[in-house]
Image (tube, rainbow, N blue to C red; front, side):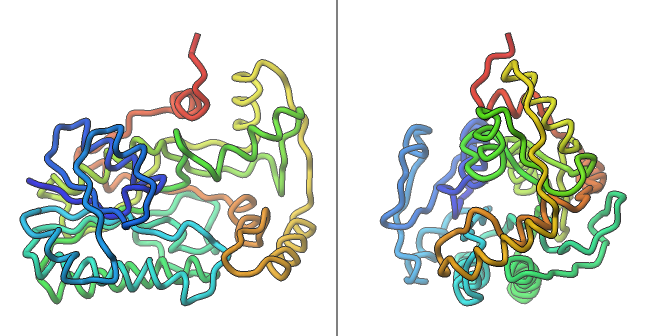
Length: 320
């Protein structure tokens, strides 16, 4: 089946493109007219520059493709509600309706575990755990899921949704870099408890899972969690110590202090300019975030990469 991808210039989207290209799948990548496509061009995939304000142009570029992968996102957290919704909800709805009009067979939506918010238990949760979004980012992610479910049902297009856990790997600019930068100064920043555990997944596995949902007939109409491995902040520190060949010291910052700093920075920084620390970030770093992805594994999908694999890929460190 011919595939078309929206959001392929983003961190996760670029890995979806990469995995599809490696599989030999016939695909098209749709990008904005002013997007940086250097990496995509290195893959040799066909690119189509489209004005996303033109629904007819979007429909035309989708025409002839059977599977639509949507990875469109605004990665900035410090945004107004309107800015969050503009891409996650409004543009996604436009692309989905265009896919229905172009008679595509399946729509695969990249989502996030942040739809659950932060009111979660210590133990791992599955897809049935109720969503309780707190911040605008969580709320809009949940609204996007509800919208694609409703529109896809009305339009008669197959829908699959993927909720990956914390994602990292090559081209990551948000999760690992702050820790590796601090490690140069022999420090490991810590908010809360060093034993706090979280689920992670290599971005290559996210790309593989998105491809799986687009190709497998048994996955239509469902929402799936995805995790690759679990760790604690202590285990992450120890892994970085091992890879860099030197020990770092915990730089402990009390959670209330971190939240206060985040609150003040949010007030100081205007919308569109990302503060170095936010209350959302503190909550993400201090809560147990464990997920049970047995549902997607029952369909036959298995992740491939361990954290050691991820770190080598992200940091370009040879295993020898």
